[in-house]
Image (cartoon, rainbow, N blue to C red; front, side):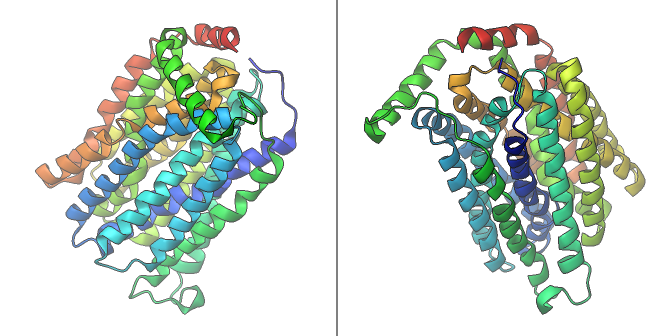
Amino acid sequence: MRSPRTDKKQILGWVMYDFANSAYTTLIVTFIYSIYFVSAIAPDKIYGTALWSRGVTLTALLTAFLSPVLGALADHGNAQKTFLFISTVIGAAGSAMLWFVKPGQVYQALIWFVLSNLAFEIGMVFYNAFLPDISSEKNIGRISGIGWGVGYIGGLLAMFVAMAGFINPEIPWFGLSRESGANIRATCILVALWYGLFSIPLFILVKSKSCNQIKNNGKAAIVRAAFADLKDTFKDIRSYREIVKLLIARMIYNDGLVTIFAFGGIYAAGTFGFSFKEIMIFGIVLNVAAGAGALIMGIFDDKLGGKTTIQISNIILTLAVVLAVCAPGKAMFWTAGVLVGFFAGPNQSASRSLLGRFVPREKENQFFGFFAFSGKLTAFFGPLFLGILTQIFNSQRAGVAVLAVFFGIGSLILSKIDEKAGTAAAKKYQ
């Protein structure tokens, strides 16, 4: 697949980006701002849940259609790091702008959330595409797992700072008002600073690669070549059968993960009456479990294979959703949450490493663009169905129950993958 990589500085720079951007998913998407939006910015929790689901849906659709195109452009224009830098700046700036949104300003909040979340998702295309170049066939699962594990550590530390400085104190840092929600909105500034600062090592330590670069022909030639390459990839899709199976399977089971990340905190608050403080503690425990899961299962990924690792996680995640829906109280819900945390990281990490084993070198950004495409094309179904069922039955439990279906169907499709054949195809076409 690739010659072994031993450049620890590049690996360090790469994993630090996971450390940087995990503050965004932890504090804004999952545990703090999403709940603040539903409970304080929107007029009521049911309407707020539905509106937040629409924002997540729109982000998913935009990511799905932009990712393959931008990935192809990055491959041909040798612009992977540039595109990642632009995405990072927009993601951090969009996070900071959420500070200015006050209760009742629903659409201003959604605009900045969608913009920053889109930048985050697009940035992951270029970030993930570095993985095959800093790893070998023998350690790609482990390095991917380390990335996810370090990411969860980053989210955990950002959560600690938010709790210690803005959520728990009677008088938050800088004397911010609790009554106006300024202390909660300040966590968006924290995310912006965290995102920007800790992403710097990647841009310094990770080398840009040269592949398919068109020299001295101008931007128009690069764009034409990128679209021509996309067209050729679609024409030759039969040559990448195992990739197609993986992308279709992930298209389904990732819907469940996206929805859990977007609505886990909302569900805890709305159904089980978690306070902000309890949600923060819940988020810390989940991040610890997720980091441990990603690191431990990353080792199993290299030994058992990515497919087996993903399947194990899908089965446990299905059981955890059922447990969360049926939980009579907080104790059982906590058990379900820890299971979700431990196996969510390996699910994502092994999906990334399995694709890394399957992609030919000259199409890495393009195929990781398709990876994002598969993760987002139908990702609106989970949040959409959750929102619709929540409204129809006036119950968040009814909405969350649909997630078990996504994990089950995704697991069934994934069972058809031949991992050895996919790895052999990558070697053949590079």
